[in-house]
Length: 237
Image (cartoon, rainbow, N blue to C red):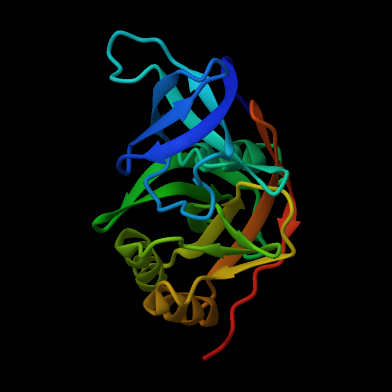
């Protein structure tokens, strides 16, 4: 579970660039916010929608607010790209998140593990000398309760999947976890129209033992927590 300490619900006005957006507070005054997601979020960040901003008044910051959540069709979507890793770490440690490909008991758990020229979010080692590389991705794109990733082409994401595929040669087990940063989702998939090569990479990886999981979350303006495992589907080409 993750909780923000100083949330205020305001109105989104416009996004100047990947990092900065202007919002209107309850008095109608403009406030400049840091957008905690560099994805497009075009279906979420629409002028006039309610958004949640977290007050962060620190001398080292250029803005005093972080834009962390958006209200869409009556439901809150968290867009904080730093949050999924913390939620997954908590889920693994509490045995909420488990992996079918692991047979042994966890012995070691590392964060930000480097393999070849890529850094992965987690490494789990077991008593049976299993080594599981895990990459975590946040999912914010939704249409009719179908979640998809990515909302913009991700060369870094493609490289991670390709490196996970190659890691089989060195005896690694491989996993990808998507955190749907919203609650109402029937299943998740790869946005093949946005990035066909990523869809093909996931197909290849899953054929070679890559385990892919999705978990949805319960979201309020100030609180986010892992809810349950959701089906992942990918259309075979």
